Image (cartoon, rainbow, N blue to C red; front, side):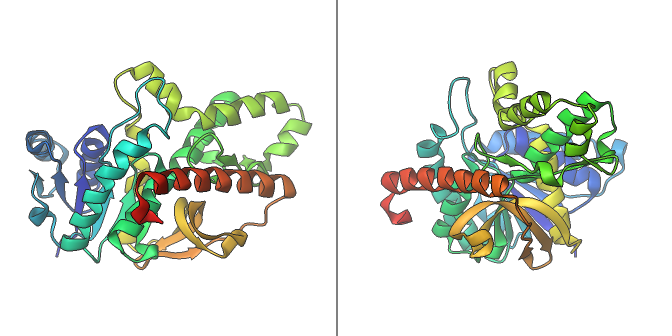
Length: 319
């Protein structure tokens, strides 16, 4: 029995997700969008590439939630992307309304699905989604940390002229300007990044600039594109999460997950390393943070809390 992945939102990320899932033959794909024509057109276009790429996956486009019934995975990209000058927070009001409808649709048609949220502002939208849908917290997760870590690793690789495969790192906290690049856990060719600073391979100023660029990685792309936001790297990140779930790979991935006392934080979604297997989020991995990382992480959590308070003002049912 082939697995089924529903993509809610057939915009740039949705279309790229559909393409990547088809190329990997991960599952059959349902592209759902209120603009049925876009969903149908993209599904048909990708399906027509199957003889060339040699994949055997069923792709359909629809605006009817019934077609998404009994999905194994649902990936949500629905929402308005950022426009230049818009903060992630400006998006909040618009995207909360959209997520409420999506949550109701999923609850009705695929209550057992593993749900991955990519819509911004990420941490708050994923919390709202879980509250609106009432789905189990270990089955509702946000995609952010993989993307932020990937950006950070790419920038380091460019700077140090080292292949990306030889760099290990991760980024924690909220998906936004308060995210925390974990320098203590960053290794290049097996060496700690701090040692490379000591050896003069990279200055601490330059490293700080790269961390800053990572935090603003999304905005940099928005500025270039003018009429849209990043989609290739976000889609690749979402697929990695879906694949770990469907194939029970138990990969350790940084994701926006529900914290129930881990890291001393309760009742909030935030970016942390988790193990994703066939049960969804099977474990939150607690890293030993330095004092500096702890205080940065707490700042990041506070930024998420403040934004969630703003969400509650917009919709009191989230309280």
